[in-house]
Image (cartoon, rainbow, N blue to C red; front, side, top):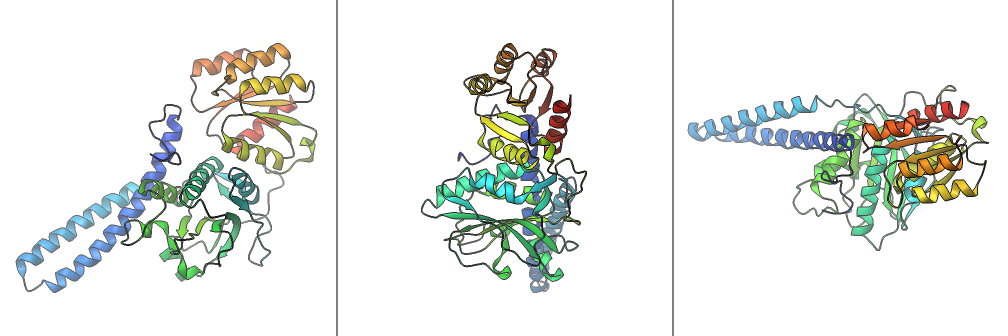
Length: 388
């Protein structure tokens, strides 16, 4: 298995993370199976017409068609368990997200969006940031592994479609405007809409050597479909271009009361973010900075204790993961309490026992968030703790 694929057998993955990955894989598989079965049924209709003079063969073809229709209904029924737009998510700044992703890879740069009339003033979508971060981390790693000689660029984009263009691209015909991110080879010519195909249309196509595994493509497409969007790809696979589309919000203006809005009152607050996962650093630190906080990063508990000790009185909140190498968050928490009994620590983890959580909460931790959590939950919790 490639290091860029999600490992369902990873003992450090929480049940929530496994469920989310399996849900995405199921949605992608349903979309792929539906498209295949609809094509098979159309072929069978042609065969029945051709074989109508040969009753035996026509009968077998009819039975095959009925079985395909039954399978299609079963797939459609399974897909209904995960409706489009299932993931409501929260406001995500695509420009900040783009910069965070680009920071993880040597041969990937974030390109600012060019001013266009159809481009909204704020590049915000409603999305699950953790889910998209995991997708892009896997995908960008796979691209650099497959095409080590290519420099890539990642750019926020806005697309407006005509109603007749939406169906073939697997997009909601009621949503004509989409925002998203585009990954292209640096210097490559711009792709036209007519060259774009849903990624699932390329699965199993003769003569197409794709740089991704089928499970990856099904799961990635499932993530976008669950958001009400889709993952598109063009056919110039020597320099592939991927387009990740999400429905544009009905109102581009940020609500002044939005918990994720910038707050100048946060400018004098410093948060120490402690986590061993790069993608947590990028997503969470970018979001906290968008809110106005200053952010210091540490990759394990020992480093966090050293930073806190060397900056007395300067750190207002420690956001501490509980499962880390070198020194766990639990051990670091008790050392921080020895250094400063008044330290404010907000713990997080996706794979930790309830007993361990209760132990640190009783010992004075300010709160606990179970991963993957919503950014809004973190913003509210941080504001609440810092206000106490």
